[in-house]
Image (cartoon, rainbow over all chains, first blue to last red; front, side, top):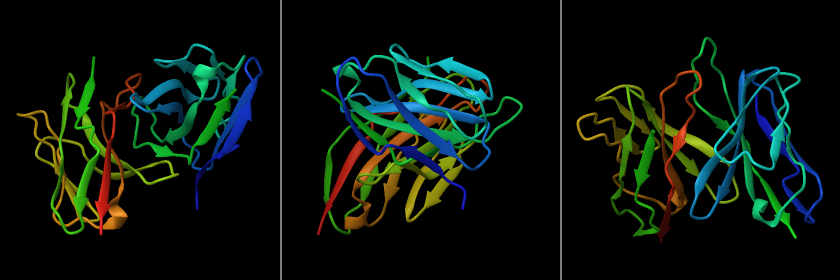
Length: 115
Length: 113
């Protein structure tokens, strides 16, 4: 079955370190998204991509970057981790071409703790 | 901009009780509406959706009707089970390039035996 997987599922790091969270989907979806989930804030969009070589900033993109070199992967990088980036991160994908965004499919999440 | 408002809870019910979680939205045009569910330790998964006014989405005993006149998409279930304990998110999408999903804050439901 097609799926979307995230790794690592849990990570503890120190302030100032670079961290990369991986996201891999096997649906061949054009669209991929990164969200963070925090108590009191729900889901907030960090970055998204509508296809290879396309990346866009979401509402909370500061301190994060993504790259899309192929259809399957959208890694999320924290250039210099801060305690405010302690959160649960979700990757999602959707099919959709010609400008239409379909239903979102989510990974199981990556819990990041920055000490 | 687009927004989704839903009761934040937590909501605590006894098994077999009736459930309503209110959701209202603000959006231009004609968005599609969704309910996602998140079980403990898992990602979100689609529960049901409706793509146009008066459509009713249904799945696993849950229902929601797209009411354009009241800009609402309330989630209901006639008899909840302990296994329904989860966080429920209302969301909208205008399904247009450049317009992403907008999620509500989520409502935590606990069902007691």
